[in-house]
Image 1 (cartoon, rainbow, N blue to C red):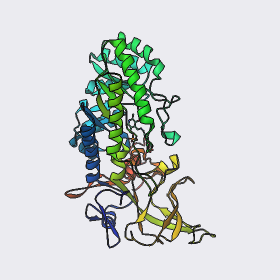
Image 2: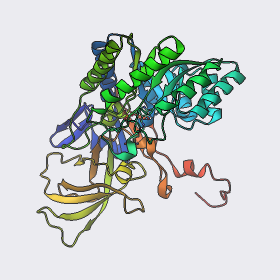
Image 3: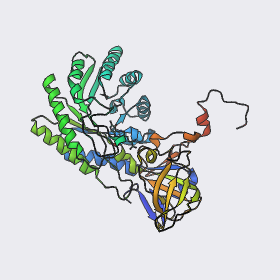
Image 4: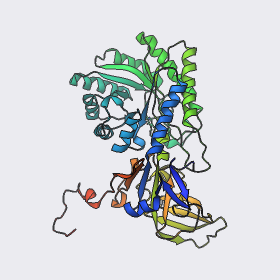
Length: 444
Ligand code: LLP
């Protein structure tokens, strides 16, 4: 069950999460239904914190990357587990604050932060802004000056290292829209030298996402420590904080490797520690910013089979025999269409049934690329069957849309005291609320 939430069990061929039967949950709450396992989320937050405590000798902190999955309940859980939150917009920031997360526990990221969002974050008292480019450094200083509020800043660099992952989710390479190029450091320091309201406290990089081959990290960390040393020489003191971002991959299908949070943190801690020793510099406070490796496995999506389409030449001996049409798809999980991402699936009431049909599992949306899973072996299914897709906590609901004017799914959390709805299903009235010229004379 390594792809599934930690509390998932199969009993008599039926899938349960936290002891609750998934079919019963779906019959109560409808489909598509996203089911979030609090135990998995918590244990992965704890894995990060305890690994840092064990492997890193100086101060450290974990900032959960809210862009992977954020709502009030999740923000609260992250804060309860002692994590800060990395936010990328006024929306994420406000949501975290409404969840009760103190503003100083938030870091504001983004390559194009609008001026009013910078102002909002400074007024709210955000812990730090991670400055992405030279223009932004000027804007931050100007806004902080206007508001008369000092702001802590980390400088984001693209260290020029390409991590082994899909090109759409690489961010640390030289030609990246994110971060300063290392040779822009003198200009950044020149701007900061005259800044009265901006205080530079650290440096940051983020290499990309869904990374299993960790080789790029020590290379990038070396480059970042050189930058730390260069900044130290220029300012006469070393910056106290360093964040090498997030990016650890998660297993979506059986053939994906498993890289544990512990080994990921150990590798980063060792690269930072050895690099600092070699340069005879004190260790920085180390921040990690994981998103997917905390949220992905914490949630499953469950869809109902609506219809099937047989393929003329399909057989059960390896050729695709059928399309299975679901009641959800790319509007709630864009990842297969956007990155060719692979997922596993199972029928929630026949988890152990032999998988003797090769099928494509298709979404409901008017788009040929809306195929959730291609070429998967499944038991025979019929309309009304429920299909669960594990590993759907990260970058699914967070990137969900209303394509085809459909409503976003409900989100149910399973905790120690049972199930509770944490986001209700969207309604057509929710969608209509933004329309200006709605006719009121048509009966609903
Ligand atoms: N820090 C920064 C600055 C980031 O941009 C990101 C993710 C993270 C941390 C967290 O990375 P993670 O640990 O989740 O890999 N939508 C894509 C992934 C986009 C990642 C965006 N940045 C996907 O579905 O694969």
